[in-house]
Amino acid sequence: MRRRDRVAGNPVVTEANVTFYACVPLINEDGLALGTLGVLDQKSHEFSAEQADALKALAKQVVDKIELRRKVSTLQQTNQELISANVLIQKFASMAAHDIKNPLSSIKLTSQALRMRPEIREHESCLRLVNLNITATDNLLVLVDEMMAYSKNPTLLLEKKRDFDLNTLINKVLGLLVVPDDVKLIGPESRYTIHYCIIAFEQILMNLISNAIRYNYKTECIITIDFPKTTGIIWR
Image (tube, rainbow, N blue to C red; front, side, top):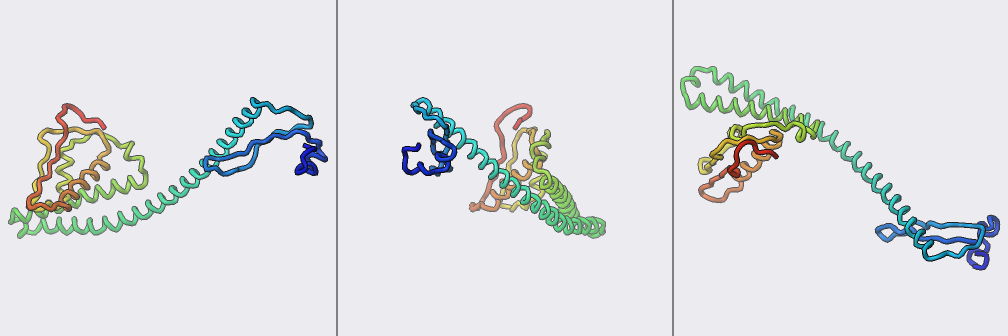
């Protein structure tokens, strides 16, 4: 090293008496130079090709460790942002659930009061509509509670799996939707039992059916809900 003009006056050479130095640049996957990995000695050495390859391999491991630490740090920051976002979502869900449940409770109480009136009880069609309104309100209140529980603990979608009757769930969902007269719904001929999270499945089914009704452009709409012909329990 003493023979090279650019390092001859370096304190490492003049004071530490370093006479041997070999280095490899640390290049990340983006092609950026992060630094160098070098070896020093106070004795002169011949640096073989095998030693150069070993130093390059070691340099690659150093870059991998640096990149891993950077990615872990990025993931930790992203995770913290998600935690903060989830807290805001939970607060919003709680406020929204409160604002939704209040009018639903009022609708239910009003419907129950109407059901007790003699003029309503005397007309079967009116009584049926009032009972339908109460049932739909009860279902919506349960749905709001279930969605609130999910917003507080999203893992409920994975933990709360159970067997449920698909045909009964379809009828429940249809009771929550307004189906126009020109829309015909055909359910499955056989009965099916599904093992899944009923909250998630109910939302999926409701979205599919409501979208099929909303975006229908035909004069007569037929929505068919069916599954492959299997026996026993459908596991998902």
